[in-house]
Image (cartoon, rainbow, N blue to C red; front, side, top):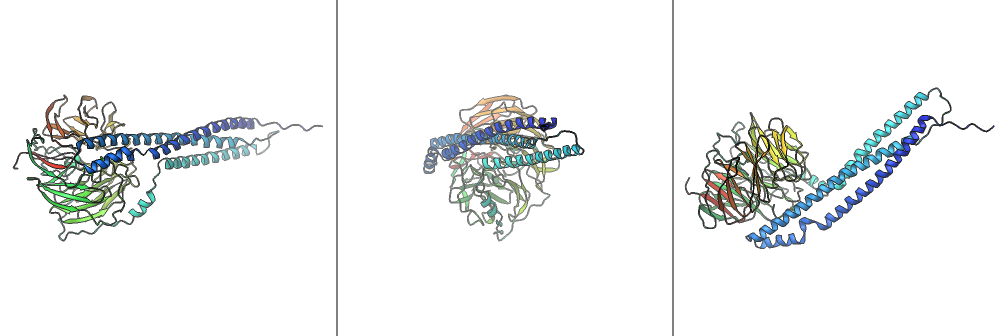
Length: 594
């Protein structure tokens, strides 16, 4: 008698059918992964070969600009070509990120489908129900669950590996191991400066404040609002000398903005080999002292990578009225007494930054606050102004940022607000404790946030303008229907927010809703940030022409004042004066006398 063929268990038949489908899905996913991986690899090779930031035309313009720094035509051509190169890099980064997400998704489907297919491959020949069959089904279910967990683990590893391949950091190990050995230099001043009591008032923008100086980038708190008693001039012409109190050459180039303490104006300058700090007399423009920043402990021998529109001295200095502080593209930080005596210097580690470090400093009480969002280890630091020792440090989950921190007082707390991708975040100034984090930003962030009426406003080109509650970080509104800034920071006053873009578009929106109030296109673009002073908005375009606008919901240009020299920095407003750094000179604008 012929043997009776075994019957296929219905459950096994179902498993076999599911397995066949899973193998088909796995095959399609494998083709997809190979295709996306090939495209990513090809894009990466093309990016390496093209290298837009070091294109021959751009390199030639940089060399010409180094030979003739006063040639405005070369400067403008260099800026425009550099902007095109940066946008090309940004576009390439976006393609890589999108490709990485697609590749990770494809790997996930491939691993999951292959795991299911493998689990379903075994068929169980069963003639009749046997004791313990239920337990065998339980064992099969448990085995399948283990395979699913294993597949999920492989998915996580594959995604991490994919992102690591798409965003390599070839210098991470070297930078990290070198940074661990950094030790701040001991104070070099023979007479230590008096420390600022922790209970002293913070430099924050309030209607009642009467700050006697401009402590750093964008003034008190870095917020772009001048003191309520400031009455800046509205009529000058640098080409004829009208309204120009003085004009002084700055020894070395730098895109940092003036900081003012009493009768002293501070700037920094640098090139590939040297770094310097300058102090000018606010009354006469005379250079009072110049100090090199050299011999800094653990300062790297490598020349940092920078672009033409960033340079080696982009961050603005800060002053607390007792000292002056500077940071440079190679991570050197230095402190000086007001009379020029060195106080201390240290290095934070060579920043991994493809354009060059540009985040400006903030001086608050007895701390020097530094946003150091570089590629290897982005972080926020507070250094003690007396000796440079680290008071606290917070490692941040963020991409490289070129924006600067702002300092605001909300209730009884002094907070730092930082703009970066992917998040705008708030920290306690005293401890560095993160108060809130809103993942609302993207792209290569260069525009700093602004604070007004209990709200934080932040924006970036190719992203959006967002309004956040300063207490909680909750998003109140967002819009991407206005011209967004890529370099210039925001200003806010009188229930309005002002934005200036590098293509020359200036926009005013209502702070409550984000709805546009007006938009105006100027002939030249803006890298300089708008400043609100005496009920007006002061804007200086890249040609050095100041546009003085009414801080109102209707567009009104009150005055146009040419400087006769290109400007990419933000002016300082003190009393009845404006201090402007041009391409080669520092200007005092206003009337003589106090």
